[in-house]
Image (cartoon, rainbow over all chains, first blue to last red; front, side, top):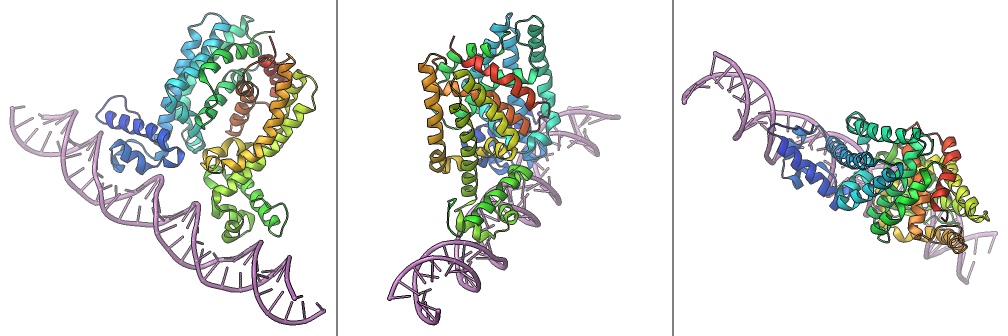
Length: 198
Length: 198
DNA sequence: TGTACATCAGTGAACGCGCGTTCACTGATGTAC
DNA sequence: TGTACATCAGTGAACGCGCGTTCACTGATGTAC
């Protein structure tokens, strides 16, 4: 899937782009094989030639978007020397991603309730694992240095990702009273307060 | 909907209970009118007599679960005198709810991606609004007293609800490496740190 | 360079299935006098 | 209390529709000699 070279690469690309645009425009209910094929200009048969099923399209698109987000988060982190700088940059990068790529953010936060995430778990893990490893290594180093509180890694993740993920979800669900600029001003320092040592 | 008295109250109750159990067991994909009717023992016609559509069932169930959760959260808050005690109790109440009522928590966090939440927004607001009002009033009072940071109410909500909502979502999505007991020990104080004044 | 063959890419009509919803109906409960 | 009527509760076969998927096929590109 997602052939990097070869003749069908362009078609594959068009299908994934169309799927993302369609999800953004029509939501979960409009995300059907027929609609994705029509939107992309490919035929049904062509879509099934490159992807094994509609869930395959969704899984590949999810892996792509998640990879994109995690790349930005990991690089925000590793660019920073101090723990505080890293956490602040991480939170900003998340909010920035939601603003610059709202369609991808919407797909990441909304799509998993179709069952593809369990049926294509291997493909998704393949994309997530190496990025998560980088992030976890950075956090561990700063825990060891005594800058970040020594709490279980998953709980650290909840504290940092939770507020921004919730914010993103609500915005995408249509709550308009949430100002991203203000969030970017307030949240990073607040979240840092929740994970700093002592 | 959800007649409080009258002859059909019992049937209505059975349908909602069946819908919740079915969602917990089969997930989004199994949540169909036919399946809900069969699970509840009611006929299709009877279901349509009491609810106008399958979305109507989902919306009523959502309103019920959300009301239940917000009741527990609001009472945790208002039982507490100090800001710190309130926030800590709030977080514990959320985690407690997820543990004691996993089916309701799963429905609250998973179901909204069906479109019923916009089509039945009025009914849902009717349940949420008075509870949210209590919560907001409590927070405002403690902001005025200088105990809680003076940040916009929605951002306060993200900081407090975000981590526990994210945790709940991941657990329900099948991540087993998340220990609720440990979360209840670590998160409340950490979250308090993120919203306290100075 | 030309010919023969194999593989890859793409087509779109057709399929069966299960979904949400309707409807003509029967039975049970409540109301009037 | 008995009778007539109205409303509410419940039944389940039947409907049309759109979904995901298949398949026999054509055309384009790559490979061998």
